[in-house]
Image (cartoon, rainbow, N blue to C red):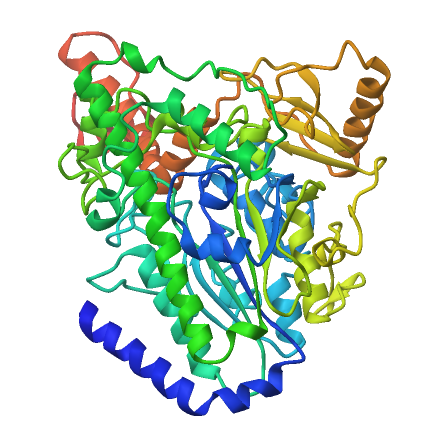
Length: 613
């Protein structure tokens, strides 16, 4: 279907629904709809309500009518976050202790390190579906792609999902060589994308279609929209990129300062917040004019992709308003982790161009962000996206774990405000259940035992009934790929592994020092030792496994990808080599006049045929 025809079809659906469904929708008013929106690799200050220069009017409007969390944390990588977000259970107990692509074989043998969502947990979708909710999903899954692991079998009534860690935003093709194809599914079956596909537009189209298909039957809905934006490849329609051409010509260091100043002005961070100069950030002035021009456009495409995501989310908001459902809908918006630093500072090197060519991509300046183009912002602009925080995706620094969280909606009696109360990704599921009036599972669900939810509902905090849901003595442990942290009250101990981290524990007050600039370990030794003891207990209680010596997540990802994609061919090749090797040795020895004891089958053949050789 062409873009114009699709737009006409959606407009017709909206018009019909507005005309005769609104009175029927009032039947569901006692139980609110819930829209859970997840951006991918979105940094702490990447949207306007948190200090960004990027235009996000839809999210700004939600923030103006809801609560912005300034101390909310996720896992620092996508799959573990998604597993905790949808279950309320720690990643080491729900099967997704790390993304499957980087789990070493020493850990993969353990059931809690499979990298796929275990059947020992109930998803929030399953719980809501059992309580009479329609449940829809459109977007990235990354929690398993066998039939029993797809979202269609994990509580979602209608789905269109991309099962991998990422994929192209313009067409159905993989973005990494470890994938043979981009694995898209619809309602549990393999799915072919339309010709005029763009990810953010398509996912909202499908969400509107799903909601409209059951509107008016008196049942509320839960819609889960995990966008591909702004995961690599960073791509955006040209009209969105054009809005930001020239905006980033001053470079990443200037942007990091600008973002910090704006975040302070908005109250997102305390006045005078200090920040470190990240070791992976280049000196903007040391780059040539051509290099600065190229890097500035990389970031312009990134901004355009965020803008496009917000634009299409606005279409969903408009649909809900026109069909009378907006006033009974609660929105939760967040990111799965901090900004992504891949892409390097020399993306146009011969090696990089060759690797992209192998995947069918180019990264020329003129077409950057368009169909067939591969783009990423690299570590320097990633530090600006996380401003004023330290580190980024994969690492346990605040830049990898602290992300935006907005909760808004007419069904929640609240005033627009900020909260600096600590919140964690496992709190999302119990918050949604609380909103819907659904009890969490008490040890069993669907005829099987399930893990208990460890998160806490944020609804009392959103309503203003309490100032925090975690006390000063509560602890929350975390580990992912060797990077680790433990939160207690206003404090955090954190360890980040090389090459960016120093493999040492540090102690910070992340309320007064979100930039993690003042290590308190020597000044508060008793608190440090107490929190470290709590972390060691967390490791024991959750079966956190040590990393093998010399573990490298990049190398492990390549090795796992090669085995997953080419494992059978490699095995057949090795077996063929073992079978043929004795004959090859015999053949070479015979031609070179070297005495050689032939294999038994060769000797038997000679005896039967009378051959002398």
